[in-house]
Length: 398
Ligand code: ATP
Ligand code: MG
Image 1 (cartoon, rainbow, N blue to C red):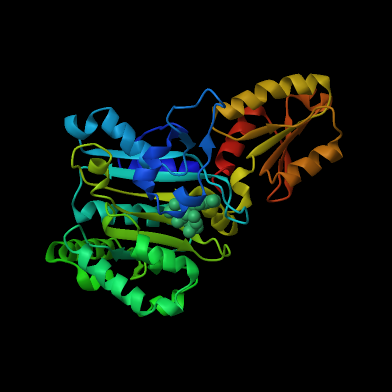
Image 2: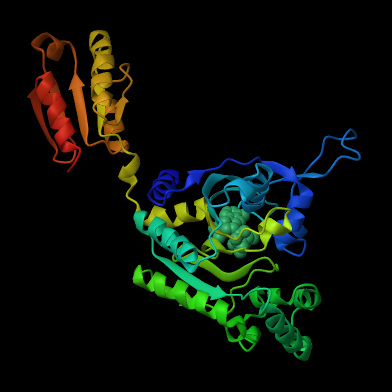
């Protein structure tokens, strides 16, 4: 998974950023949002016991963006060199009810683009998620929405508040809270799904600039042959999330099927004390991608190209040098235990799904040959060393 993510990052000219595992709690409150589930219910606080009295509260990172933005500002890049293309890869921690696809420590691959207010940046993020899915042979469904900006969102928010108040008796308990604190979050309530179908839609309230931006994103994504659906219920709860919001879901991995979430956060850098630099990004859940990829990726990805089955002490010593020659040619080699018998060695070769087994004992050593068994073709022949190397190198491709 991580190799696919890194390869993608390379193709899109992104640079890796590594941010700390913990930050001040206040950073997450201000950026992830005090009314978000993550900050309200899922944070792990870090304590140093009595000594930590009076110090800032620290928290383990539940997501990457706040730390990336904090580091970006702290290093002065927001003023000296604002246009930056970052990716990160690493563990995140949230207090969750563990289940398939939902863990207390999980991994995210994330991308953040700073200094790019244009629609092409948003479109490229969606292309990245799509491309990551393709490279792992996954079927992903992308959904996109626009939340407008500080100019046009207040009217949408007001309409949603009106709508919520007039449907108060039908809304769930949590939504009663959400309504006053953060009405946009009514739309991602898992309980009131049917009811909120009829709620106001942000797309109907966009100003001309936001509408043009959204249309361009969608046009570009179309041109890139990425399939997507417009989902009017997709929201982010905070004011500095602007315009584009998108998500990706995978089919066939159960209830926890959201694999990626992203969007634009033009107000965030400034809200955290930096220059008014626009930003846009996404985060992918590595374990969820892995669950989905398990269905489509062949097991043989991890299989060795060749196992070496040496019988006896002299052959075991010879095998060390042979393993080295094969690995130098870029092959994946498992040197089997020389203390096992032939039957056990062949069982192991079968079990790990190797393409070739090289078998040799005292007899072969004396004659300067190896038994090369092609486990795919179920054939075996005697070869010298150079023939052995070339046969295995050639055989790797097919
Ligand atoms: P969900 O609705 O599934 O809780 P979320 O909205 O909390 O997701 P984000 O904060 O947007 O998720 O994180 C982006 C991605 O990280 C998700 O789409 C998902 O793939 C992954 N993710 C989030 N929480 C977990 C978790 N506890 N375990 C595994 N993966 C997770
Ligand atoms: Mg969550």
